[in-house]
Image (cartoon, rainbow, N blue to C red; front, side, top):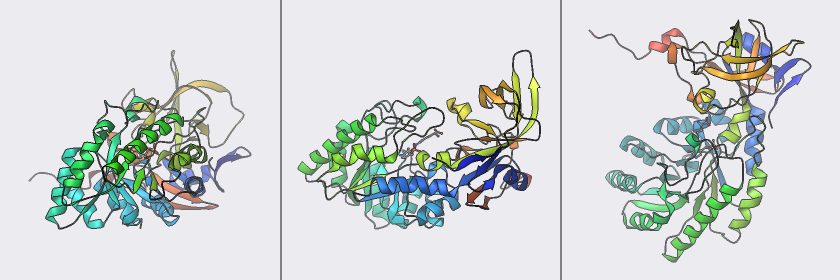
Length: 416
Ligand code: LLP
């Protein structure tokens, strides 16, 4: 669900007209809906209510500190993958004891920072990393809480760039070798085994791969128990897909309906989920202004003021994002490429899309841009990054100011 709807011909973000936001804050502009974010978080909380759980929102989807504070105040923990994300989560007030830390390349500084902060657990992705965490923990006189991220070799049936749970991927420890790595963990003085973690990919639209991966993981939990290793936290990862177009992914309730029965009787377990996209994706739009309509013999281009530096997903994954006008008019439709100002042919928001014609100066909204939108943005072509606004009911708040030219060179120095 989401709270971006037309009232009459005007697109609204909750109770606020999108066109007014564009006029007030300028474009390109990210607009998020607090009501949508919370509805999605609550859907998870309600779905898994029958079992001890922590919902650890995956920061990488959208890490604005206002978004994090909102989710944190409503009970969310955090799934992080860098020291920077830890910094953001803590700044936003998310309790360290609800933070899990994944990623194949944690540095010594990051490990120290996380140990010092008292996070719930590291999701460890290799034997080397396990030894490094043990060493760093020993050096500062701490015990490091860990889960091993296992790679269950299950195909999530999604875009190859965002699949992670197959043997060929860099992520996790092959599930068949996991027992041996848990034994290593148990032998290390400064390591405390807390759990097991898996995450097989993103934008997953079927329940099957989840269930298969979880079953494999639970078999491992049982084998570990036989070896005297007790698992308290079962981290099922994130990855639930959202409808960008015609996809019909399961909702958290449907997912829980298939997962919770598998956990029956496992009273000492706490379940962790790491949703990112399914919380933030449909809770945000990217608003952009039409600059020019350019027709060639081949094509019709709608040139807008947002580019691949603002929203990379179409260029990188060929991802589909619905595009709608901020104000619907009685205009002819035509087949258009919606492109940005970046000097690359790969800079497009949509290709060969049948859209209502808009005139220069009018606004469009790129839908489902709340996850992996701003967070994957850059300053490419020396473009200041857009502003971000959070809407709640009929109120709107600037949660990140638009960058200025001076921001572009902040930190740069001439040599003497
Ligand atoms: N947990 C781990 C360990 C992850 O690697 C990810 C995403 C998540 C949780 C959250 O997954 P989600 O619920 O959002 O699917 N940039 C890509 C998506 C990359 C996802 C990477 N890992 C995109 O725009 O589609």
